[in-house]
Length: 103
Image 1 (cartoon, one colour):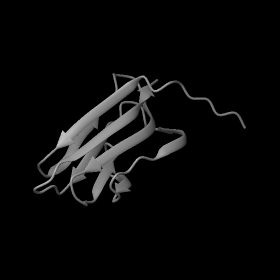
Image 2 (cartoon, helix red, strand yellow; image 1 turned 60 degrees about the vertical axis):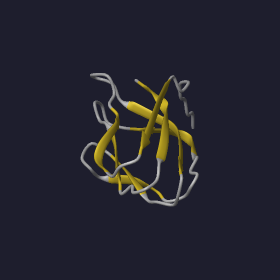
Image 3 (cartoon, one colour; image 1 turned 45 degrees about the horizontal axis):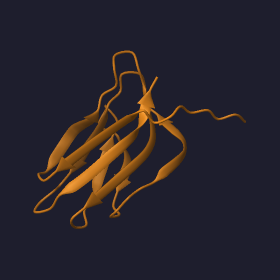
Image 4 (cartoon, one colour; image 1 turned 30 degrees about the vertical axis):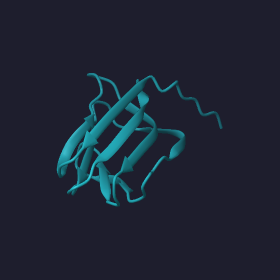
């Protein structure tokens, strides 16, 4: 098996202090697909955050603080598909950074 990935040339940083519902974190350039290589997140208190595909389908729940998984191979989204976030945020700050590339 041969697995190939490119360097993470795109870094998307977001910080939220209010509840978010299907908020777009990353939209790829037209005709491109996101290849997500890592995520970093932190919050000033515990909370649960849903990461969603463009169809609002949850593909990852972040419930740890901090949360910093590193994927052994990129998570590849469909062409023109965005990454979204839904979270109930009250009286705290939530920070998230997405690492990857578009191809």
